Length: 86
Image (tube, rainbow, N blue to C red; front, side, top):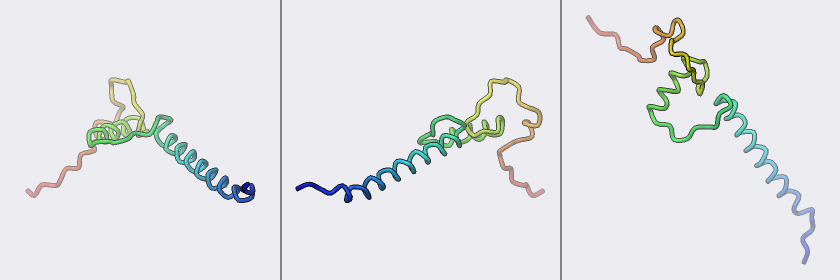
């Protein structure tokens, strides 16, 4: 018994919407990573280095080959130091 094509239209719309939303999410993650692929399973060391790269270049995934830090980077310390009671 043949299936009328009208019953397949909603399924086609649903599949198309999943494809559009998946492609859009992939594009947003790609743009947020500076054009690089999204990173998986980051440990604490990777997060520290990505934060350092963000402070150096302005992008979370940006890297620089300049051996000398830009001016003002020596005061840009990510460590939070508690105030000591004296």
